[in-house]
Length: 240
Ligand code: GLP
Image (cartoon, rainbow, N blue to C red; front, side, top):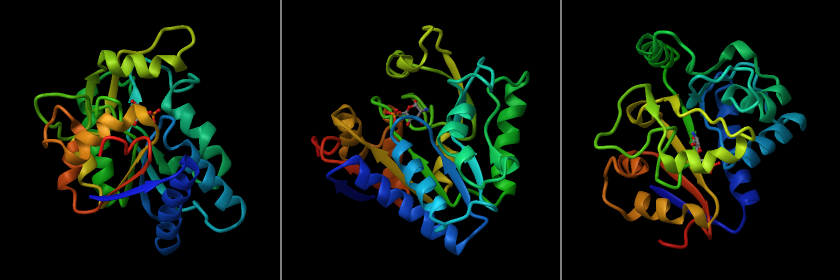
């Protein structure tokens, strides 16, 4: 793992967006794995800024989001579809038909998970996967478990994740299930960039970097990835 520690979230975002921009310049039809949550927000702002300055175009870029809530309409303001539109897609020249999400409302979830895995495969796989990390070490919505998941799967969210994400659901009705790329799908990405900001992530980062490789801390699997970069701030690095 390549661990880089920064003084501020702004510096992390600059470093992450730089990696994406350089890649897209070389490969205009790059296939990107995208994440939601607070951690990548600033990175998306940097990408928008670079697009507005004419430094990069997303016209041919393809994207696959990590996850989506179940039982929440796509149009809901808290869906990850809405998050991506509001914070990135509607500000750049990406073609919406090149953006993909697992469907959290599919009637046949097993078929939906297969469809998503197949689509990623037939697109040639993900070049760069952006990740945040949950306080319990989850990546995507792969919660601590006895086994590492493989492909896209439906998960029941843990109390810890519900507590962390509830702040976004002002009516208090947060979904309790989600559909997420599996640990196997994430590990198949050619390059991984994980962002962690703030002291709340320090224990998860310690377990990811220095802890035992265990599905109880899903992010610890990144110890085995050949090209994983962790961009974190001093607070998140506090326990290393
Ligand atoms: C959610 C998302 C994850 C994200 C995590 C951390 O659970 N499914 O992909 O990494 O939250 O979010 P934040 O960056 O807001 O701390």
